[in-house]
Image (cartoon, rainbow, N blue to C red; front, side, top):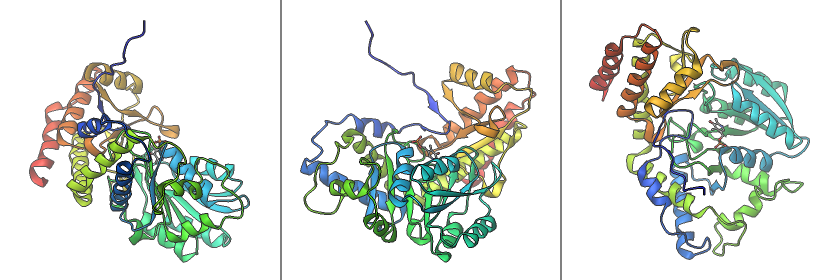
Length: 394
Ligand SMILES: *Cc1c(COP(=O)(O)O)cnc(C)c1O
């Protein structure tokens, strides 16, 4: 007979999911109630206003899509684009490529602006594409490229989109809660995120937000959105502001308790404090990595604190090290993707996992595993370098 499943307790320091705060797991286990229960609807309103805080927006069209980050991406593209539209997509990693897939499946034409993986999106190249394509409807890019650990200048790119009278589409799956992100100040028109990265919630929901300008594009479409489930014109009947909420689909009730708790935790800490915490833990981690003799793929000024792409000597076997960390230390880190496969580890310091204990644990586990494989590692110096950052900056 198959028995109940009891997962091992791991420390999650990969590209997501990140460690889930126990408060969130407890919230998840509270009693399930009806998704049209007035008490539940009040909680949905709180989730909306907490998301407005997290996104720094007053956008009325702000809600969690009932599916993971990829569904948030699909929601944005399918609702904003119609067949025959043109969209400029800046790609500097895996997720820009998925934007292209989405745009083309909407029947839109994707004009790709390619940048080297590990580098930030080039503003001048984006501007050139905008000036060469005055009929483009939107400019899309990934704020925090989880496949490489590079941050792009969302503020500058959105200002460009406005200058050329384009909608801006921003992938903030890994940035929300981890680095500065200001939807209204930066003039972002459409943004999507995920729950399992810097919000440290369970996977399966995708917060999205649309400016009034973008909302108008959605409500005045020529043709219906091809996805019934993701059509915001319909979803709004359930998540909308009208007094009477109509059934569209059964909301993932307990997952929404979890998101509510995750956002309450973020609000208690304060957004800016959360950004500072991510920055500090990254600095300590980076000091340790350097002391270990390992390198970073991304230049310091555009490096994401929550996703560290660490390069290692070719003599080291990527999978062997990751397996040792998982089996001997219950520690999960990520592998490289695409062009970076086998050449880097992606080490996440996201949300609840971005803390001093995890930084020191990961550095010492990695130092031990690499030393056991013959690398000349200064374990003591590694931890000392990280601790020095905490002792001088904390
Ligand atoms: C994780 C991620 C996604 C996809 O989110 P899922 O929840 O895995 O569907 C999209 N974009 C970026 C930048 C991501 O890091």
